[in-house]
Image (cartoon, rainbow, N blue to C red):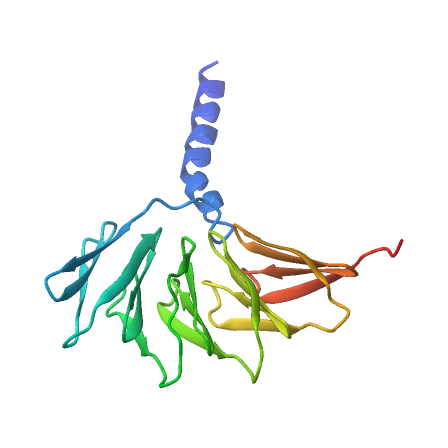
Length: 220
């Protein structure tokens, strides 16, 4: 009996020790708490990291006005009348980009737990909360954004020419071309997956691999 108790205790200890490793086995598997707070104090833009305990500070420019701010999970975005700023937990500094001369600024941003999207009249801006990098896709002449979604760990933007997937694990936008045959029926972004359904195929973007997969639909 004592031997079985000893073996059982050993197995229980091994299970407890291995539980965190299993929980981290899939990137972004566990939903995050909101661990980033964005504050505007006088002329300072403060990102307070509740997890790491640090603060990241940027300074408003002369006559610059904050129009929108938001934070979710590990990422935060501020939109002003002059630029867009983004930050993540454990970031050393705010990432920012100024508007171009003819660019129309966005009214708000889309926030996931590890990604953010902001769309102007000329660019799609994505923030990768994993590396803390701000990336961009420049819209082509007369290219129009059709829909944008942000899930916990994935972002997706669909234009009339291509679909863009944003991953916080690999960084950057990953694109797939669309054709005139693609009549978009639905677009979703949940957890680590983005799914685009057209009338003749389904496109699936996996944030953990940075790959688009295609599945043909049966024609009726």
